[in-house]
Amino acid sequence: YAHRRGTTGNYADNLEVDALIVGAGFGGVFVLHELRKLGLKTVIFEAGNDLGGTWRWNNYPGARVDSEVPEYEYSIPEVFKDWTWTTNYPNYQDLRDYFAHVDKVLDIKKDCAFDSVVVDAQFNESEGKWTVKTEDGRTAKAKYLVVAAGFAAKRYIPDFKGIDSFKGVIHHSSFWPEEGVDVKGKKCAVIGTGASGVQISQEWGPEVGSLKVFQRTPNLACPMGKKPLTREEQQSSKKHYPRLYELREKCFGGFLFSWSERSTFEDNYEEQEAFYHTLWDHGGFGYWLGNYKDMLFDPKANRRAYDFWAKNVRNRIGDPRKRDLLAPLEPPHAFGVKRPCLEQNFYEQFNRSNVDIIDINKTSIVEFKPEGILTSDGTLHEFDVIAIATGFDIVTGGMTNMGLQSVNGTPLKEEWKSAANTYLGTTISGYPNMFHLYGPHGPTLLSNGPSSVEVQGRWIADAIKKIHREGLKFVDPTPEASVEWKKKINSLSDISLFPTTRSTYMGGSLPGKAFEQTNWAGGIPAYKETIRAALPEWKGFRVV
Ligand code: N01
Image (tube, rainbow, N blue to C red; front, side, top):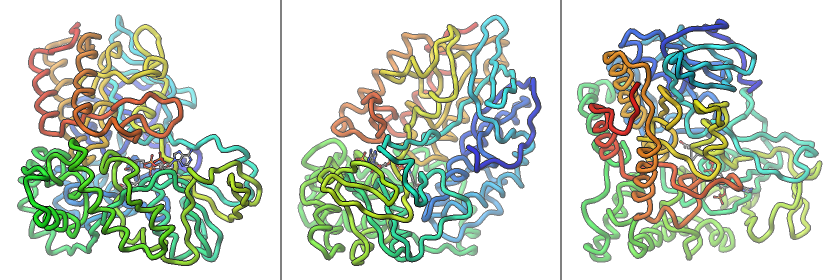
């Protein structure tokens, strides 16, 4: 965490609060705001040095959100009232500025302890409190613990042989130096073609001396549809925002669109083409979560959507070898079971003679050398700068790497070795009065972040309010409820094509990690209804 260090914020040893939140991104800040309304003394522990969560950490070249504003912001009127964006897809700096605005309006930082890396946390049933310890040896106690660590809190760097011997500049995408890296005229490499790798490659293409992108699986990226936004158009539509924020919770992914009501083959070929074109030309995730309703379920419908994707992307790549690697005629996996990146001119970069794609399935990375990377065909690729864009210990990694233990003292890391288990995607059996959001078994990676965070954050605040009102010591989901929830998570996923491929939804890149669905695949409206139904009678909870 070293180079995100700076201010320490409000942080005393032996802190005693009502609620302690871990993480100062969209989730943690929203829950703080909600718990303040209940009059609870609440503090956020944040590993970094400022607000913003993923946008504090991810400042790699080209880092930009893939969800549109104003969907991708809080529905809090005093926050949106005086805030305007310059584009519909803000970059990391815009989002940092947004968090500074949120702080100005809601005075968030006065209740934040920065540079506070949680390394140990356990609930004591007789005391009815959590004891939380930080890396620098401080302790805090709280009746409630809210884990808002996000889905990308623990970076993953593959165990490449000789990586430390490389003499040039090398960084993981989520740990890029604040001052940037000069790549003008330099020999550069990007390893990984997830959203981070695609964005870095797209940004670097015009600047670098040469670029080699090491690809394991092609990213089935779709056009972003980025455009400028004026202050006037945003201000004049603010009166509709409350309705818009209600609407986003009624749409599958928490965006402002949902699946088509039609199935693919209810339309003839021309109608399909016209529909696909409308989605494609508009840009954004419409071609993914606004496609025909059978696209993620029926292999034939999915293949049809893939073929349209491939036709449109292949047209943009001149070199046949590069074209076949980036957008093969045969799908590498079903379309949309890996999150498609939103790109602006990613594919055009490969029309430059100094930008190349290397298929590491054919020529694998053997080892790093001081000069660069040696591949299995015996080539030593020389580099000045390497970006490692190999992702994260996705979804569960934030929670399993902060020393959380059950009441019996079993580390969560051990309990979740073969499978993650939660109840409602917000609680874990054996972890009384602990709540989590935008993590395992919520809509998380299948949703627009702020929509998920608000649905779960309000539920958490209501649960805590109810505990208070009823004078309870704690609530703890039963193991049986947790088993049932796991079945629900799996059954929603098993009817889809998601389990056909390893992906960030199904365990991610980390070798040895369980192959399992870690997200609620039933959409935000059904999720909201399901978790809401459990609250009035504490269904599935042991109540003490
Ligand atoms: O990481 P990823 P990310 N050798 O896990 C490859 C979201 N996000 O940082 O597909 C070589 O998606 C791996 O290959 P494969 C994003 O949506 C959003 O890009 O497993 N390569 C893959 O290509 C996602 O949910 C935004 O075969 C290896 C890449 O590395 C999450 O954050 C921006 C490898 C990892 O892709 C993470 O995205 C950025 C190895 N040993 C991220 N291991 C926006 O809002 C893995 N790979 C725009």
